[in-house]
Length: 336
Image 1 (tube, rainbow, N blue to C red):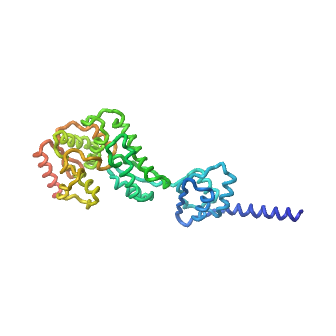
Image 2 (image 1 turned 90 degrees about the vertical axis):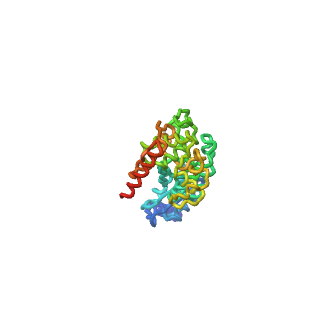
């Protein structure tokens, strides 16, 4: 009997020692280790993933410890392990849901093509997959813009944090949600009255805002640019917005990175040189300032504007004055 008790005691000590080794001995990962634990993974699968990544000593030890603490749930997500830690520390991180997030920066004016590239560069998946979602999941915005052919214009510029357990539709939906919040705040979608001649027609206002966004980076000029284009629309004068030609070529897949005089005749409904009126949809994703300018343009007699060579623009009411401003720009460029 004493021999049996001794064997049991030795076994208990042996198991205890092994468990202490498995749980308390620090492990140093070989560089940065990312482990993606998807929703629905069992404890056994999670332990196997962690052990395979070299961040815990023993998958069995991890499982045993979790069974002792079975009331604590392990959170799905992507985890970064780059520091020495014990298995107990790793378990605690999964209980807290201390997941790794990928930052996606969407500047004002980015097109859906630019955003797709940013999503891919952030390590969240294929840019083509995001683009496919942006071009097809129009139900995300159809209640506000029933004529929208894509999510272009409604992927609001901001700094976002996403995880790799989120789908591309989840990512696009977060950007559309941000657009909705801002649109509500400025009265675009809540029955507020605009002074742009379109009331609160979301599709037309966002389309105009996207052109304004591309034309000037100076916030105080945006309402003036808006006035030029609304004045042209009122007179049935072609908008002749260069960014619309660039977007037309982007959609066609043949933009070379520079605009040439021959491009102005490119046949597309988005080319505002060959087609009067607004394009059929936004040509980028405008920020709040441009949306407000499109909703509340300045009241002017301007029909033209041109760069002054210093990041701002000169505005004019007549073609003669505009030509003089163009001549000044050429002189300024030649003088540099």
